[in-house]
Length: 584
Image (cartoon, rainbow, N blue to C red; front, side, top):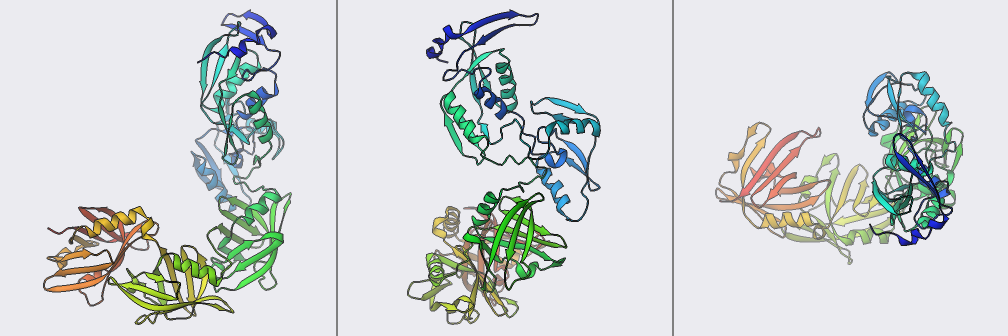
């Protein structure tokens, strides 16, 4: 470490007091002013550093209801009669889920003693019963009371300090790797046991995760002072950050649209009615809601913060179910839960990709950006999407649409129509009557479009293979060889022999073929991503035995020498396994 000669100039300003004890020799040095790096024992900066390294005990307040202490894990608790072993912070959410299951019950939590309490100075103390714990809790004060610790900014470790002797020469350098060691070291500085300087630069982490690099004491002092009160320390007794200020809550709600995932009113579960209703909390208290059928409803919204917590008021002239002042009882990342007494609850999830304002131009732009595959098609109660495996659609600016079937493009027309009920889509393709319906767009996202027509539903998902390296790799592997069925298992039945002597090939244009036993079969194929990688195989219904493997298969393994595909049932159990290997 290079000696900081600038610091040696401070020597005339120091008064030196040397004392001895039976254990060790200590040197007390009292600087009269602080340099760019040296910490003065009784300075505000030293207090700031010490406070920023205190234990933040608020994370487990749902257990101990005290923000200046923390309970050492693992810990056994009884929550509303259920015994839970808490061995990580993830289990705090389990406790809150039990508390939140019913809004009108009495929640109770008991700990199995003895327990170990960690105080603000990172010291561990054994606590044997409720009375001893209550004494520590009382010292912490109540919810959200002002305390000494600084939680809105943290040090990014490791950091290092230089230590000086009585002649103000560097005699040691130490590295600090966590808050506990920093707080203990700062205690020695404040008690004048050591004189030390911070080795800059030092990186500070703000509450929002952003980082600031500081290069001297003045910058560090100003950075901590500016940030120390700039966030909500969440020193309440709820696990989630439910104590938003009105301003923060309003901005959080306005940030993106929200989708309804659960809805109960007067103990009646209406989730099926309101599922995926899109809600936009707009400026000036304007509330816009889009139903699945495309209807757009406009109302008002407002928030307020009371002693019981934050409340959200929604009002619609023609939608009584939502018109209520709701208590916000959970705000997690991307999720808001609200309730009101009497069996009323809404769970909303944030989705910044949802488009509430459907316009003709926006829909046309989305359609023309990439290919689209038919992910779901239900017409008159029959699921017909199997017929569209491997047959993506391409929409063009001149209102023509093409569908790729067995490697050939079949051309038709399409039109985006503005109707009273919303934006509609009409597709005219010869031989495809189930597409030729008056579809209404009920849900719009850049990568997904949901459509309805009376009792019919269709889902289109965007397909842009050229920008996906995994899909490109799969394409290269498939077209590089001809393949044979090395294994086809349906549960415990081995049906591999049904495909003996057949060769299977994949063409780049999406054409699929199988040749053997004097037969030639043709179909379509597609490789795509949808929460995993899939390979769609599509043979005609009369193409026995290949029609049986017409399916959207989950790719479990793909190499130039082996492709393993699996079919799962609704319970996640494997129904079929298809293995392809290069033709020999």
